[in-house]
Image 1 (cartoon, one colour):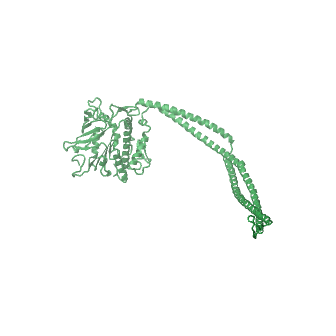
Image 2 (tube, rainbow, N blue to C red):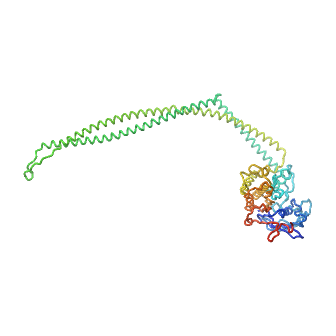
Image 3 (cartoon, one colour):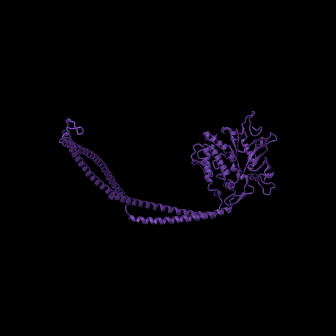
Length: 608
């Protein structure tokens, strides 16, 4: 992990004594009342960085120097830097290998005996050699300086509520080119000289040729397809297709109605067949029963006939009066005859048999009638099924084919029109490619051309994820506008419908997006970010009703992402959400403008 962090800032005064602030490696919050010295802390840091602040203190404060202690994230040791107000030199005491102790010039001067302070800060983030970056469209170069980079990670109170991009203001083109080149170098480690641009142009030409060849092939394919389709159209011989479709549709509907009627009639006949078959089955059941009963009657008649015949034969047999064994006299017993009763039973049974045979004949006749009815019903059903299969279904298919053919005509016409449109677009594309080739004749440097293809996409993803985590009210979709190099929310730029408060909030989120991108992808990451008053402007009467959840969400985000580098936040005590910052490892310094034990009045001693 490259980069560095500030451990301590000390304002020096022989008259009033030193005043200091200690910082954590992650989140540090400097909070206080207005004019309590919060911004003075940021000015001291800018002053020691060699930024735009030349005088961090008011003349009446009687403070005249700043000492800052910094530590490297990936190297052992510390640096102590000391600068006196009004001096162009910084005295550096180094305990970090590769950075020499001594006096450094804040402003670079060619041939000066002291090395530039720029070397110290750049070496802390891993840039060891002097680097020249492109500063304008003509590929002219300037030295990469720490001051070039300050805009990336230091958002001061004067810029925090800017309407324009805090990264790329609209009206400072030269400065923007220089800054974007510096940002590109942080991300990629490349300077993108004219040689790089020429190589990029050659690649563009090769790509353009490939696209031109592809477009020409597509135009040729479209022409061949159109020719084939126009041949297909001749089949219809200029018929009134719309009228033919209407007629074919009507004929098809009528045929389908006939099929429906035939199927309905077939269903009715099938129901009648099933009912008749059920009645025939009932006849079979009755006949089976009658056959078994008739057999029983015949068996009874045969049995009775045997009884009568036996009685008749026995009546003529003489009775014995002598016992054949003992020759004793036997008195004959009177015999009972069953002839009369058997005859009566036989006559009754024969009468029943006769009636049964008549009934059986009636059932047979009824069954024959049912069979005749079934034959007729099946013939009718077979005739309907045959008509459906051999006449109506073929007619339906033919009419469908006719209708589909006419619909195909319409599709062909539509496809031809579409092909012509595509061909026109392809032609416009070729013209655009030719115009683009003309513009390549003048080789110019535009830093945005060198950002990765996924830069804008990733920044948009970060914008959405950060705003959601911050509980941004009414969020639908956030977007990083690469053209303006700025964040947009719900399709609007940050200055469209909100005041300073929302602009400060969204500019802070923009810095957090850059911070996350550098932490994840940059070759050289400063790993330190300073924001002066993220909630600036909430007392201007426009954004006072921003939900507390948004303010708290922003500061919770600060606490939850301390692994992305040191973050120094300076905020008004009236604005900052009341959260347990220390519990999350943050360092908090409070300037309360109260003279009381345990309270710190302000940053500087005896300055009110």
